[in-house]
Amino acid sequence: MATKHTTTTVEYDPGFVSNRLRAVWYGFLAVLLGIGAYAMWLRIDGGMATTNLTSVTPWGAWVAFYIYFVGLSAGAFLVSTLANVFEMSGMHRIDRDALFAAIISMAVALMFVWTDLGRMDRMYFPFLHRQLTSALAWEVHAYVAYIAVLITELYLSMRIDLARVAAHDDGWRGRLCGLMTLGRRGTDEAARATDRRWLKRVGTLGIPLAIFLVHGGTGVLFAVAKARPYWNSGLFPIIFVISAVVSGTALVSMLYVLRTRLFDGELVDPNLLERLGSLVVAFIITDIALTAIDALIALASLHPHEVETWDIVLFGEMSWSFWLFMVGLGWLFPLAVLSKRSWRRRPWPVVIASLSVVIGIIAVRFNIVVPPQILPVMNGLPHGSYFPTAVEWLTSVGMIAVGLLLYTLGAEFLPLTPLEGDHE
Image: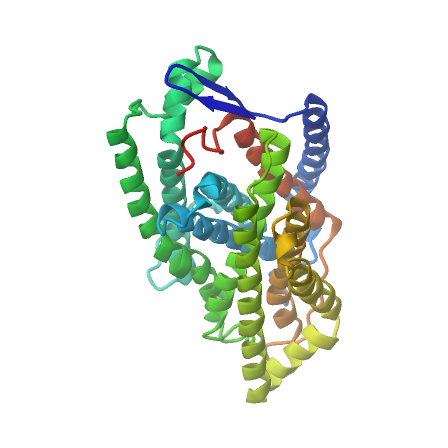
């Protein structure tokens, strides 16, 4: 993307640097969307019989992906607050990317939980039949407030550039940007100061919302399940938040590099890259420490259900997910890649390490959801057994493709990179 700002003109040309790359990418997404749409039709037509979910293991891949994308959203949002609330130097370049990724991730998360509903047509019932004692009811309303915060922040962060483009572009893009300003076309210093002031206020409001109600609240949905001692832990919501920050920071780091190189056609800022890489390392170490503490508490309690669940995670049928994906890809490999300062300042090592984290945290979510449901809640009941069916995998691929398409369209048409002169 070429961007140039002067007192008389604004050249705004977002999109892929190569038309061939654009065609290949959209063609790839079209294939994934077609596969996902067919699998979704099978899900709607055949109901839950198309899955391996049972009354013993009622939660599976869709719930794991749901909490994964909620975590991506919360983590990406918290990264944006480093610029908008805490005013960390150099972070303003990625705050819009982080906010937009948070919105898209939340939309994908809600698609997953909607697909998991036995009666998909009743998705609006929590708003009609409120239950004040239900953690899930509170969580649904928190999601609505959180999405409103994200959209408001994204609007405030890029309104000035939307107004600039609207004022200097007579084509459809100018008209679109003009509509998105909601009538606020001022670009002077007073208008800028107003946007920044409200951006900080809304971001400050969103921090406790994201930590305590959105992703911490998602952890509460598991922690209040007393029948599953593995979930019934006070550390569980905290671990949810930390792993969310790990995956969200890695996602923003990866998007920053890829969009800067493939859309903007510019060089990445090595100082910003090093800062993001250092944050990923710090959050991974914190995640390892909290997971180890949670495991030690569970094992030291000698509670049979908790010990047996950890035995399944570490040495049983889910051990490959724990050691290969969670420990290997989620922790050790990115720590090794980002251990050298020179590598943290180079784009592709950061992309590889970040992609490894993003994939590895998926295993974290599966290890949270599936193993505790394998053991029966009472003696004499059958053991659970679960692995996703093709319909579960392919619908998941389709919903992820929807998120990728939405992000790509946003990157093509929105000023997610501040126009020149508006990085701070």
